[in-house]
Length: 250
Length: 250
Image 1 (tube, chains in turn purple, brown):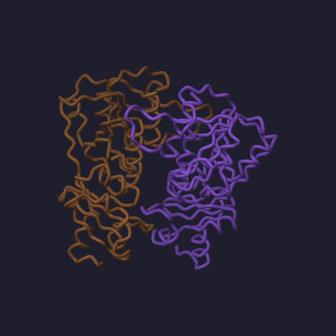
Image 2 (image 1 turned 180 degrees about the horizontal axis):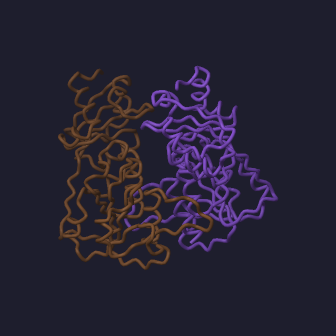
Image 3 (image 1 turned 120 degrees about the vertical axis):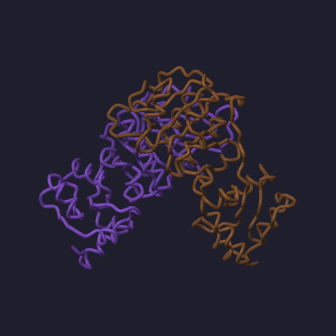
């Protein structure tokens, strides 16, 4: 019930982006998220490292041909990224979502410009999942979607929402006629917008907002008006995304 | 430029809730937040621990009678809770906000039932600040509003939003006629609500939602409808708060 030195080395290497990119996979931890992933995408599972008890009660979820590694709790702790104890650690293949001019966008799509906080990206994917947003595009300098903190915060959204890294200009080549809304501080009130759907909504970096390059390519500049007596300088990027998605899909 | 053993012990003790409660103060860190706090509430400042360069360029902000402690960077690191280097560490007196039946509620007020994540509470305070919500009430089992992670995530909202710990039943004794909205999974769509203001909005715990006790005291049950094709089980508590506040104040 001990991991071999090579197993230990391999599973721990996946804590780092460069190794996830190299192996084209990522880590999913926690009982609930692991069960959801196993049930939804059995063919994407590469390895299941888990306590024997967990393996026994979840046998029906284990895909044929998957590497199953029963381990003791202490071993699991060595490879886990969670601070609280967990029972299962999955290695999952990264999906290959392909987007080009033949792909239809229904309803809303999001473009995230340089979102840096993993919690924010995970929360935005969860919002996309809630509001039925199928495509989320990330600028190449955004935090990696397979970062374990993003995966945890997304609460399984990565199973349904298609997240693709792409330059804004490149995206526009594939869908030049899509209306492009962007959140900026001096935009028109989102509460008064009559959204034309399908549409793309661009969300800016946590401190710098949308880059000038992207702003120049917007067709609509929108903002969330402050309330009477409001004092904050800005809203959190994920909260702003939630409010815009709610207004655009209601 | 070194801290004495007693200073070190005292400043570090404020990392813990029990000592913050005992001394009735809290920590504010980071250049931007410290400057904002000094400018907005000079009388609430107890101590300023900072690099000599920072002290020199911010002399005009230092309130008379405040303890000022110039320190070297290495010393500041010993008492700091931030992972990235910073230049200033403030000890600030906790405000005494008093709410009773004579206090008027204008517009919206929030009641947070057992919000546990410091990032969520800070983000909710920032939302309250943005939408001009003056009062935010927290159940006694919620995360402490003076937790350093809450203070950081609130982005200075603690300077404007009045946050008070109070049982829901006790709050209702002071404002028995206030409409009480609560977010629940099976409520009426918030998009179709015609809010009666002033009103109280109750937001539930991240995983359990609103307690049965509070649900029994609501006058309106509301929810944020899922979008077409939406798959997520729930929205993040802060995102849900943002969407409800946006709809109620637009």
